[in-house]
Length: 380
Image 1 (spheres, one colour):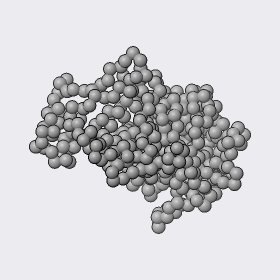
Image 2 (cartoon, one colour):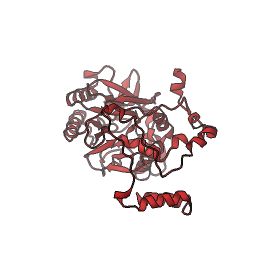
Image 3 (cartoon, rainbow, N blue to C red):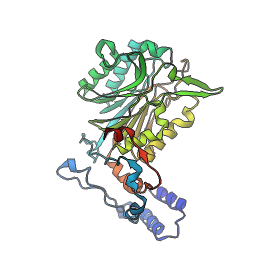
Image 4 (spheres, rainbow, N blue to C red):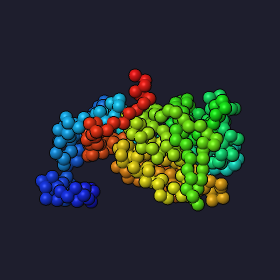
């Protein structure tokens, strides 16, 4: 805490101000003498999350003054929704809003039946290790190529034999009583193909279906060229879903590059953003972690990603490095490039604490700019 506070003071050049002296005096105290603001757990645990953290004594209350002239609430149209109270989960720490997520970074082969069986075992292993939410990679049942998408595509809406991949996800989520954000698979709908993520609830029912909104069409000379639009159609709808582990916004790989989508999800009250993705060996080392941390920090929520494992012999080589990032932009858990299942903890009670420390929502300049959620505006 001392290093974080000192860095903040230095960056704002406030070392001689009363505020900075207060900050440094607080940081220099022994742990036993510091004031921490941990909410009291009431008898009715449903009210726990709604008890806001006391205003931090480190900061002057200037946000109300700014709000009167800067109109921060108008920076989002329609108005941003409040962060919803997440379901009460089994407590594995002092917080009743803590649970475990499993990120399954899996190898993918041309054998679709093998891929489905292998993924089933990975989900079961993650659940055995305590995961209540499991996230799978992008295109986990098929090689990642324009030639493969039409061959491996499934009719998700028809289900069962027409979509063995999602039938497996439905069965496993129901049997294990977990939530699954099912990575993505090629979807066939009429004469169109989509890159689609399905979310299954603890009852095995399909809760949401996200079709990749931003198609991966890039050309980096001498490095990589890929045009998803040669075979795939872009989705048209942002996807946010209420689950037993909170409100989740869904994106697929290239969607993470567009901060507007993440901002819309945050304005709709998301606790967590999930991005199954398969960044490559050119953009992966430069951008993968950077984008995850930026989306998490800017929107003050959790971001989870899941990649296929790296196969150097494949036509498209994935970067790997599946990751969970916290609302301060901190990397909480990550893999390397090999096949791996990691289990990490998410604590939603931290969201309010982080937002109290850095009250972005109260400091936006609605008098200067505005983000419009067209889907919500058109639904009114």
